[in-house]
Amino acid sequence: MTIDKATVRKVAKLARIREDEGRLESLASELSGIMDWIDQLNEVDTNGVEPMTSAVAARLPMRDDIVTDGGDPEEILANAPAARNGFFVVPKVVE
Amino acid sequence: MIDLKGLTLETALDDLKARRVSAVELTRAHLEAMERARPLNAFVLETAERAMEMARISDERIAAGTAGPLEGAPIGVKDLFCTRGVRSTAGSRILGEFVPAYESTVTEHLWRDGAVMLGKLNMDEFAMGSSNETSAFGPVVNPWRSGASNRSLTPGGSSGGSAAAVASDIVLGATATDTGGSIRQPASFTGTVGIKPTYGRCSRWGVVAFASSLDQAGPIAKTVKDAALLLRSMSGHDPKDSTSLPADVPDFATAVGRSVKGLRIGVPREYRVEGMPPEIEALWRRGVEWLKEAGCELVDVSLPHTRYALPAYYIIAPAEASSNLARYDGMRYGMRSEGETLSDVYEATRADGFGEEVKRRILIGAYVLSAGYYDAYYLKAQKVRRRIADDFDRAFETVDALLTPTAPSAAFGLGDNTSDPIAMYLNDIFTVTVNLAGLPAISVPGGTDATGLPLGLQLIGRALDEETIFSLAGVLEKSAGVTARPEPWWVA
Image (cartoon, rainbow over all chains, first blue to last red):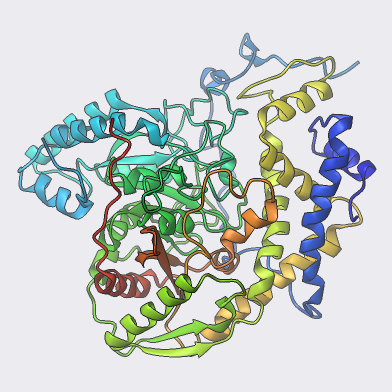
């Protein structure tokens, strides 16, 4: 198996998704199945091949570094799970 | 009473222009059809009041002689497009009751041109799925049924709501998106036309991101001409999307009906996969014959890296998704679950908010991008992606377009493919290659299988050459002469 329980635990932590201890085993086998199938990529000779990062060949355009939008905190906060006095309310970040 | 059965966008626009019908009448008829079709679960939000208001304005503009090219045409919007003041969920619980303060560029273009929004369409969660079964709102049911059976079939995915709504005549067209086949596979499963244009044709601004280097918007419509009309409005350069192409938008509809005589069409031999149903083979052969009769020259071509497209996609797409979906942390919008610490809140929110398939892909993405694995997986996949794009470049040195089946099967039963993720992924085997290469491709109905279910043919074109595949699709549509519509079993 490419991916064991400990790896799933670590990756879930990296991805900030809580996974119950009881689910790790089946997730490991599921993800291993997918990764084993993906491993057929190793059959492809990619020596000297430039990685393709974008489907668009053109260079990314630049624009002037000026403010084009903003200044509406009420609109920004309208969808917040919790907001007060023009700020997002979040759990304590610093101990 | 307006008969909506088989009513095309093209005909409706003519009727509106000639004042044979008003936008209000046409919209009301579609709203009634939408209500009757609730058993299909195609809509996650109906916006009837807004639709009537938009229709009234359309009638005013028609009367004033200031009508846009789509004035008064009722359409549906996939819930991946942000719509100002209208809840947008991406088919996920995690966005909760999110109401955007902005409008996606694509929908903005459609409203500019006079289209009327009937509501938001169901879809696989974050566009991750091929059967609409990953939606937080439950699956869409395909309006088509197999023979005399009353079994519920999938309309395909991820744009299942869009495809089902068009096929059941409750909208004149719909927006959709395609990251690995999410426009074309549902079009194939529902007897509709769907085009994924060249990457960069349609702005991605305001479209909830799944895999940014692959995501592209496009229409699902009843006819090739209708798809051309919708795509013209949806396209166009947008400074708000840095990957949007600064290219002129042709009048795609004039390409439909154009002669295809003398065009060279490639038939890629690697698309003849093991275990392909004979009916798909037969459909493909018919497509070849139809294009020959229209004066095309059909040639055998090779795209040697085709079989590696799906595994490469399942590295690239989850990697990009795991980055894009990092923003759903329960702090600024969407739902938030309770927890002791900040980390607990993040982890609980994402555990409760994301469905199983989305979590699976985020985990794969985080794994292939994690320290020590990046070169072996992500970089490797990007190199294979280049090989796949090079295959197409070489083929297009000698041909003008490629002809393939759209999907390896007809619509399957809801629940049939949910236990094996890879079996589900294989739905995109013929469609995913062009997302990797950034090329345009269209699915057009080519006929039905023995049980009467629709099957689609796919045409792939050169970058920015949608016109050639529109003209070829027009030929296939005419030759296939598909007139069957699904029986409206959903009307009680």
